[in-house]
Length: 468
Image (cartoon, rainbow, N blue to C red; front, side, top):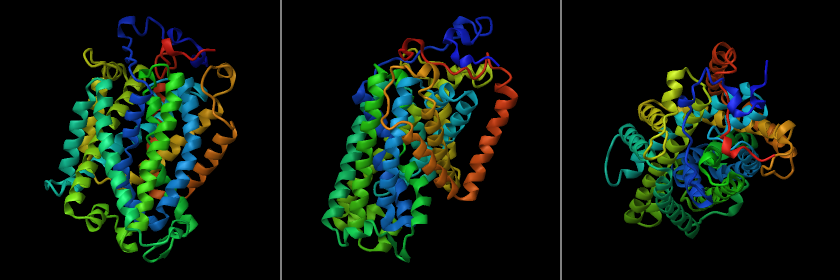
């Protein structure tokens, strides 16, 4: 079969099959490193991850939470290098699937897309559901209703111009960083245990073993993920060869610090190991100060969660937009998802397709889906590592893309670690993720693969093809 990926974009789809008038409009390039970092940091959602996701980690990892997060963050440095190289080599809103599709093959790109789709559809509702808990001092609303309201509000904001969204999310980001910094200062000021507990983990019932730490890595990767948003925004970044890697690395460093430093402080300052395992960070802040300060922190956290939902809707709508542009669906669906607002330049149908189902998912029990998301993130990073191994062969060898140090050792090590992490995950989560992936493979076999010239044609914007 002809390798359509080696053809120029204008040759991949016959003009007779797709009329010129139906070609999707291009996204506007308006982001630099600062704007991209603000949006990407907001997607890392350091404060919402700290206050919504980390408490569950405290429950299973105890004082070993910081160590597990640190290991995950070190692993993410190598993953970030892979994203940086691939994001400049393949500057597409499709992110991981475009990178895997161009370097490994269309089928690999499709499976990467499915893992990304699992993540983008489930993560925003999980984050949004945490809003009610932190708004409780001000208003009592059912968590599911509040989560749905947050998702719908984020959808409305996501329809606006991307530059405007960068400043909106930037303001919220400052508030959440301030809240995380205050918690860190209070935790260190009230430290009542030795720092040795960070490397000799304990729970109320006893010590935490190495196996538990390894199992917790999938969740830790979920907590720290988000820096990859930079590659989803590559089509809207000015000079992506320079902007993308800087945005990815700055996001990883700053986001990791905002999460890890307060986690260390909370671990040392928690009144008891049981209080740490309970994960009631707001209660700890109130105990360290008074209810007024606790309420202020809770309000900042609530705003951080709203901020996270906004950025996730923005990011995820770009994934659907790109999949439609690359003809992943029947033609009416492709036309809808690829529709760009003439006023704001946003893919408005794709934005609604992400936000509205996200609001509905807030009424579903997401405990199991949280585990599924951790597995999907791990698999997604695996596809990125495989794509990085193929990023310097053939026509990509002489590309002007940013190149990571220590290639190919970095992606090989990442694959080995991720493989072991997958081996330790719960069978139920593996079966669910595997079932979704198998169904996607059948869609590929019976619909996409027989139509190589008109379906799943993975493109790169013509004006940003990497220089050779």
